[in-house]
Length: 249
Image (cartoon, rainbow, N blue to C red; front, side, top):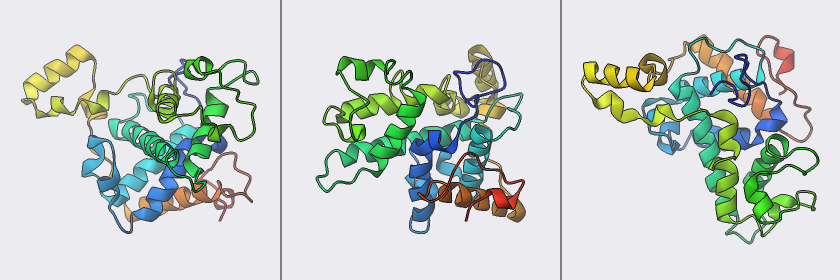
């Protein structure tokens, strides 16, 4: 994740909160669910399985700062854990959106959130340019409540969020963090393979940052502010922890 692989200037792409509904909605649910189930037990990415809840929340904080704030992109790139955080949230939203297609009770939170990001990040020129999967099914993005269209089947949702040309490609060049087997090799062999494949093990498979109490308090406050910024009465545009008044409560 270089803030966005679609920007090749080395500075990274910055987003608006509205762009990231596909990430913020699942994070909101997970943030509340952590009191019942540890976040690592709900993670879809293996590399996140060693994190405790405080490390998880601090990683969320790092990721959303990178996506929303005008802070430098790390010279060595974002860590595998930070990249996996984004992939985990995308996967969670995709699974929940797909599940919603099976219900007849009108639940559409995840489909609506995913569609908001799809519309803002993948569809341009008033619907004249769309992901190929939507073009193939003759989808009209201008229809009322497009996210509820029966044309958006389980397979289509998966393609839009996790498939080629979907939201996954908005954030990632590769999935090196998933090559966990490299860490099971003897050190010399692991470093030879890493060098051959261009993987920086210290970055891609480095340990999560364990926050101090002060760092965790800052991260938690930021995440809560980000969650609140998605509420109907707020006016999200970006979050900054530099000024408490910028975090809506």
